[in-house]
Length: 262
Length: 286
Image 1: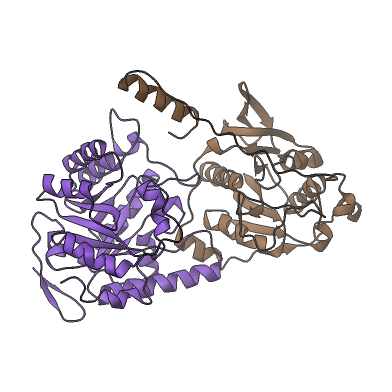
Image 2: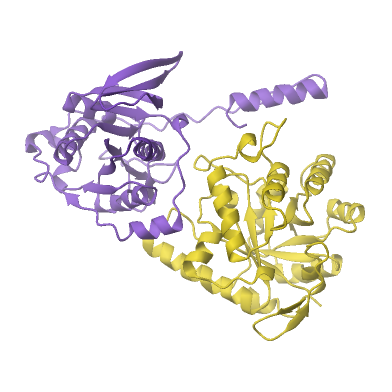
C-alpha cells in the first residue's frame, strides 16, 4: 500500500496574529511546528504500513523551512518526504493548495491512500483534504477515527459526526482526514531524529509537478478574506458541587470526564 | 562497597536495602538536568545535546548525582536514557537518577527500563507526571493494574518492581502544597508499593507539611528540592498561589538555610545555573 500523508507546518502558538493588510497569518518570527492533527495522520500511515506493507511518503506545500516538519515525519517512520515549494504557489488558498497537492500526488504515482489531519490549527478550514479528493476525483471520508478491513481495493472507516459515527466503505484510491482519537502518535526518538537529518528531502517546484500556472497562487485562489476577527474569549464558569463527599467526588469526576480532563 | 569517584575521592557507601541513605550521609547533591526538547531545529538540538553532555559530565566529575527529567511540565523532550546512549556518556550507577512518569506507551516504558538496565542506571524517581496532547498515558492494563481507573506512580512502581525485580531503587514525589491528608494517604500507598526514598516539591523555607512527613516517616531517606532559579515566580504553579514576578530571591542563601533547617535530608537542586551557581554550592553542605 502506497500512502501519502499531506502535512503542514503551522505557527507553534495559540496566539496567532493576523496581518491587518494582507489578512494572512503572520508567520515571521513565530516558531513553527508540525500541525498537531497531522501527527495522527502520520502515525496511522506508519501503522497501516506495518500491517500491510508498502511505503509512506509525506508531502508538504510550504516555505523551505517546512522541511523541518517533514524531517520530523521521517523520524517517526515515514519512508520519504517531499517538499513542494515555489514562489508561484505563494498566496494559494485551500482550493489552489489542494490542486497543487493533487498534482504532486499524481507525480508520486501509484498512490493508494492519502491521509491528512482533519484540519490545520492555523487556518482551521478542514478543506484541503476534501479538496485533494475533489481534484483527484477519488472517494473521501473526513473526521475518521478508525480504519479497518483494509484490502487491496477498499477499506472501511468510522467517520465521526455530531450525533455519532458512520461506517463507510471506500474504494481505493481514496482520501481520508483523521481526528485525534484515531491513535496515539509516537514521539520521535533521538536516534530517529538525528537519522532523519541525513535524509535527502527533494523540493519540487510548480513546474516539476506540471501545475497549470492559471490554477495556483494568489490569482488562482477564489477565496478573499475581507475581514478577520479574533475568536471570542472562551467562557469560564464556576460550578458548585453539592452533596455528600462521595457524591461530590462522583460529580467532580463526571464533570472532569465531560471536559476530557480525566 | 567502596565507590571511587573520578576525582579520586573514595566514599564508603552504606547501601542498606538499596536505599538512597548513603547519598545523604555523603552529602551528594542531586542535580536536575533537562534533556533537549523535541521541538527545536537540528542546530538547536545539537547545541542542546552539547549543553546536556557538558552539564552531565560536570555533575559526574563533581561526584554528584545527575537527575534527568522526563518530559518535564509536559513539554516533549528526548529521553535521558537515549541521550546518554547517543552521546556515549559514562554512567556511574550511583550518580544517575532517571525520572519516569506515567505518560508513555507500554512499549516505550519497557524500552526505557531496559535501557536503564543496560546502562547500569538503578535509581528511578517515579512520578505521575504532567501530560500533554502529544503524550500517551499508560493504561491500567499496560501495567497489570486491577481496580483502578488510571495509572499513577503507585501502579507504575508496582509494575517496575514486579517485572524488573532487584533492578531498581525507586523514589517517589511528595507535594507539601497538596491537601496534607490526601498527600499522606498517597505517600502511604507509594511506600507500600515499594518506594524507598522521597523527593519533595521545591521549597524555599521551612515547611510544616514536610516537617510532619519527616516526623511520621523517620526512616525514609528524604531529599528536599531546593529552587535554584532566581525567578521565584516560576514556582507559582507548584505552590498554588501567585508569586509576583518582581520577587527578589537569592537561591544560594536559601540553599544554605535549607541545609540548616533539614540537616538530615538530601538536597535536589532544580534549575541549577551551571555558569555561576555550580561553583558557589561547593562547600555549602557542611
